[in-house]
Length: 634
Image 1 (cartoon, rainbow, N blue to C red):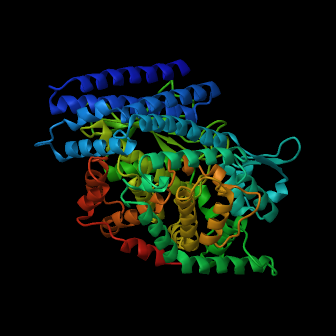
Image 2: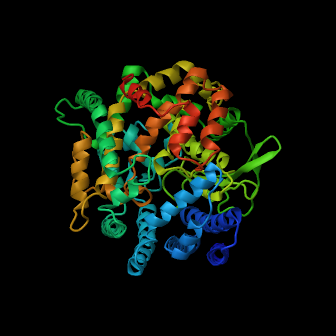
Image 3: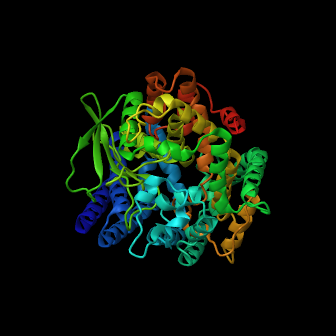
């Protein structure tokens, strides 16, 4: 497998080099010939890099992961060289756009802009330094992610401390020979423990451990990352990396991003304070002298309030949400809405035996392929994400996408989920649909999830809405023993309970957004990142910083998203508006879903995201649906 990934990388580099050389050297090419060479060169590199990135994050063999990491570095270095190649830039500049269709014009204009943003028009010394910095930043990002992925901490816990955890969770973790249960910082352990464990001491201990992952290694790695990004931004004419990173996004710039963070934080402020007061009042019923709510108390007492105020215990839904039934239910739901079907395929050479593969079809037409790698294991990516395997192109290649998740693994006992995990699966499936349905554009550069970064999350956040509807859930949520559908009243009570804590959740997201942005707005020279993150936590959330914890060292979004975590909330504002036609016409009515598929998903990145939204809604996006959602319920 390692040799295969290396061969793929080297062949992509060789082929791209030949195509670029032909484009640079030729002056008599037609527009389609020139753009075909340009698009094909970068498509081959992109697909090879995507497969290397995937294997780096999922393959069970450390040797293969290491080889894939090296391949990814080699491809990225070659791509960086192309982005600084003046001959290639000038060849693209010569392409005559007279009479070109809008997507082709958008391809050329955006590509030329990206060349300039990369530094192609700088002097030779500057371009060489830019090249070195970009290559180094790839290695730094991989190191940062590897340190997080490989640092799984664990506790040996007396079973009595696990009182409150769901019975199915406890059955899946029998005590060892020493009579103790192993609990790790992986999400499948961490989230249930801090949500339901009655032992405050255990919740605190695991919460602290989770925020010590990759420490102290990533403290120095992050300092290098911030320093190199700041230097690169200055070389490219920007005062900060945040200014550079936001310039070509929907939001339009660093100042606008900072203003957006404050706008959302202010909008959620009063509600956050009410939520926190409710948490403290509930904690004082258990601890009459309590003067504050600690961060490891938040999820625990939120669940207490939801159960007592709304009669909604999230654990009650778990027997109705067996993993395989949920997976099949989401396949059936999305098939109904978007007019597709999923056909199981046996792929004997997948990277792990647990990987499931489905072809996506529409009648007799093949649309693409999806790969599901859904359960945790050693050395695997620790969160939930959609990875690209192949970017599609009309008439050339079918798109292939991969869900990489960490849901409980079915075994002798059923693997049960809670509604938040179902929501996560729907979210990631939204990305997968965008990749597959948008993978049939004329130009590969527009394929799939190729919009501005701050629109990327909107399609996935939109799909989350379906978890709130009892009619939708009752299609697949059936009791694991009796087969009875989940009670409609339970779903409505759980949905109502989700309104509690909305202010805290939004402000927590703004804390993450502020960390992401502010780390990249400051001078990194001598910056105490731990102190900055502590101050931001206390500014945006009601919780005090806990000495000896280092959230930012395992905040994986600092690698991929850099300064752009705000995009989750920016996209959510849009997603709430995109949901409006479904609210009016019905969640299981295919008509709005098919219009949405055609207007938003299928174009991929062939036009600006604001135009995609306008095409679907018939108007520009509005803040009003988000504001109504934020103020509703509770």
